[in-house]
Amino acid sequence: MAITRADVEKVALLARLRLSEDELVSLTDELSQIVGYVDQLAEVDTDAVEPLAHAVEVHNVFADDTVRPSLPREQALANAPSHNDQAYLVPPVLGD
Amino acid sequence: MSRIEQTANELLQLLNQGEISAVELTQNYLDRIAVADRQIGAFLRVDADAALARAADIDSRRQAGQPLGKLAGLPVAVKDVLCDTDTKTTCASRMLENFRPPYDSTVVAKLKAADAVLIGRTNMDEFAMGGSTENSAFQITRNPWDLDRAPGGSSGGAAACVAGGMAPLSIGTDTGGSIRQPAGLCGVVGLKPTYGRVSRFGLVAFASSLDQVGPLANSTEDIALLLETIAGHDPQDSTSLDVPVPEYTSALDQPLEGLRLGIVREHFAEGLDPEVETTVREAIKVYESLGATVKEISLPHSKYAVATYYVIAPSEASSNLARYDGVHYGHRTAEDCSLVEMYCRSRAEAFGPEVKRRIMLGAYALSAGYYDAYYLKALKVRRLIRQDFDAAFEQVDLIASPVTAEPAFKIGELANDPLSMYLVDLYTVSANLAGLPGISLPCGFSKTGLPIGLQLQAKPLAEETLLRGAHMYQKATDWQTKRSDRV
Image 1 (cartoon, helix red, strand yellow):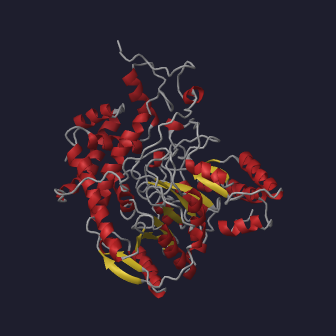
Image 2 (tube, each protein chain N blue to C red):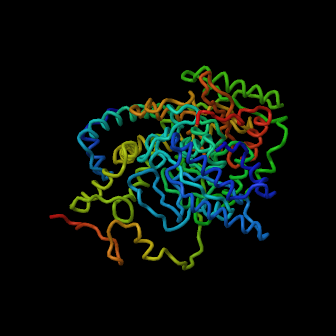
Image 3 (cartoon, rainbow over the protein chains, first blue to last red):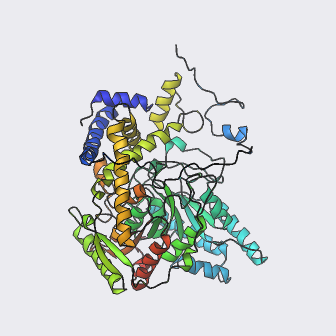
């Protein structure tokens, strides 16, 4: 299926990627090619097939419900681009 | 500085007998890196002082007669995707250029506990996305057999450092072939374990249902030694398998009489380089001469493996990489803007083209209206691929195939053609989709002197059979002893 520039713009917003004009053009073309290749999956009859999300189907691995030390705040903040020693700092959530 | 020719097991013996110290050995490798890596570019960072200090500590503990770990004094290179508190973990991305992990990955912790000397961090495709290591944000890595050619990827640095004599042991990761393909293209041995055999805790996630950590080295014995060290259940990774780890090193040397080797009809088709085909078929004849019986089998859905993979892996990647938001860690834009704009700019500024492409592809496949047609469909085909293998392994113990359709390609050759680059994964992605262990080992050379690899695959948790099959072939041939003399 051909992917349009509008599709790419929509997905870029979903993926939180600000794409340049050049990137929008090249990705429209490249994604169309890749999705065109992937479209061959449509020919496989999968009507009676359950999806396989994980190669090793492990279910319900329970951990003991015990309190353990968590990452100290100082370490959790150490790699943050912006913090005030208490919390991560972010730009205003609601713009003007 | 002459190159160290011994395997890791041979070096370990020298260390244990006191014929060489860990400091001497580490210094030898550091000297080799100083010369060879200027041309190859396998390492992103080498901390010589830290490596020597660690080696000195091991030597003094050895002299004091204290118990030592199983790799005591052996240098090990680690792909820059596994967290290590002693160094940055960049994933070869601008996004994590300054990221310093707050904890060790389980694999790194096990290597430290085994008294390995962690000698450096190897280059890779950004976030392990790619097959040539050209997607690194920092540098190109060159194939030690031909410096104009790519080492493969994404663990290109991990394979090139072993092929270039700069480390006896190396840790890579494999999501669609990222250990086996570069091992094949660089003429070394590389093993992707069964999904869940090795903990993924502290491995920076690309596609969580496919990622697996594994060893690269010059011989199967070395692979067994390193796998033994890093494998095992980890409560920190709920997908790791709670199954005892066999002593892989002691299971290698057993005759192959009675071994059933499968050849997949669909593997020897259009697109396979004739030289690669001839070389792989020669290797299969060696197996017959060693007493294995060869049986042709069919994996009818194998032709859909790449398409299935390139829906599932990017979908998981787009979800995993949503964490890079410029808030908790990683790059944040310098622009003064609103929150959503900050996300969009930070990610656009710090991710390279292939990472963006995969995030976009995954976000598309998961988006409303396309989820059933792409993501869900791919999961169903994934089950059919797995069922093909289940049926095949009723008839055979191992499946032999090429690793790649062609030997190493030129740097830049596929860089502008993403789909052709994806198709390089043709023979390797199925193992990840089905969770199988696979190994790539040298089985010959092209006329132009490029290594050609043989891939063996086994059923889940059959690493012992896999290693035995690889080892007995290596005993009967000498391909794994060949070293490039270009650098």
